[in-house]
Every structure is written in structure tokens, then in C-alpha cells.
Image (cartoon, rainbow over all chains, first blue to last red):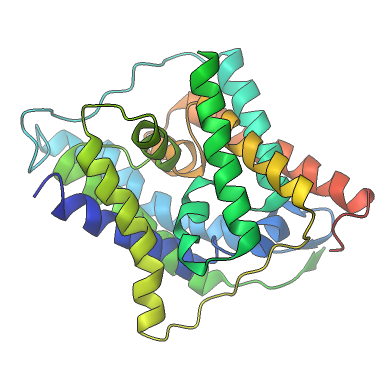
Length: 138
Length: 146
């Protein structure tokens, strides 16, 4: 249940959401970032719809139950970071530059693999390499 | 202001699906659905939790295929340019940047903001800002025509 059924169900739900919302279309993402030109505000509605569900989940529901339904042994994942530091800002800044260059972030890039589009695959391989470079530099 | 291709209903509906995915994973299994972190831990073979990460990523790939099987008309797919160098550099920056900054659009933008984390709000503000500047520059340099 906790290692196969739940994650595959959640992954499918996430992939369907990314596709319906238009996040898997790089043109729409770049259209959202193009606020000084012809602007496509749709992405605000993606984040709005998602946060509408995630916010009460973390702020209300989590407090009503003491452990995740199918994972009492591990409990809720905890976040160890607290402060806004230079790694957070520089990393996010670099991510935003790459995001603006192509219009893909990690989720949509993975969810688009089944398109077998050459440029999308090149992006996916480069993104994976970028992550491995970070691992090697650690 | 000049607004184009605006799809509030589809985008909101998709957003709700994403939010539900985040909620289900957290309430049933206790994990944050930050995709860059899940994928990074998978490809660097982090031992604990390998199996659930693998099946999450498989599900992420299957989701759009299921929509296609039902002949769902999605909002299309197009990269506004075909410059291979931009695509490679963009990919490297997304991969490296999300790991240095500990998260992407899902981890910071949806999970983090959902927790009202100041770190994630700062991160989201930063990547949207540099994204906007990048698109402005690409337009100015003639790489994209929007």
C-alpha cells in the first residue's frame, strides 16, 4: 500500500493535473512569465487551485491526525531547513533562469516523457545531468 | 495589458488535481510531493524510500498517457523556440538550481507555500522573478517572438 499503490496513484493524479492545467505546455509557462508582453495569467490559477487544497491539508488536517494513515512508523516528513540563505536564493534564481529559457520545470518535464518529443527529451537529460553535477560537487 | 491564451477553468481544475495529489501523499504516507527532490533521490539511489519514489515517478509518466487513452484534448505542447543550446543550458540550470535551492515549483510553490514557509515563499518569488527577466531578455535578443 504505502510503497506501490499510494505513490503510483498520487503520481497519476499529479501527472493528470499537470496536463489538464497546461503546465506541460512550455509555451503556456513562458506566456505566464511574459508579463511585459502578451501575457497568459493561467498559471496563477494552477497555483491557486493547488494551494486551495494543500494549505488546509498542512495547516488544519495535519493537526487533526497524529500520523499518516498508512505510515505510522515514519510519521510526517519534517523540514530541517529554517532560514532563508544564499543557497536557497541562488539555487532558486538559477532554476528560474532555466525555467524561463525553456518553459519546463521538473514535474512537467517528467510528465512529458511519453510525448517522445526530441527537444523535451534533450531537456530532460540535461536536467538530470544538472542534478547529478550538484551531487558530484557536494 | 495584453492577455492571450487564458485558460482559467482548465488551469484551475488541473491545479485542484495537483493539490489533491499533494494532500493524499501527505495524509496517507506523510511525504511532501516535491518532484525535484523525489526525482533527485531516485536517480542518486538514496536507499531509504527508493521504491515509493520509483512508483511515484512511474505514475507521473502514466497520468498523461491515461488522459490520452480517453482522448482528452489537452492544452497542447510547444516549446517557443528550437534552439538546442538554450534547451541544454536551461535543463542544466533547472537540474542544478532546484537542488541548490532545495525545491522547484511543486516543493516550494505548492507544498511550501501551503505550509506558509517563508523560505518557500522567498524561493517562489525568486524563481518567478528570474524567469520573468529571462523571458524578457530572450524576447529582446530575438530568441522568442511573443
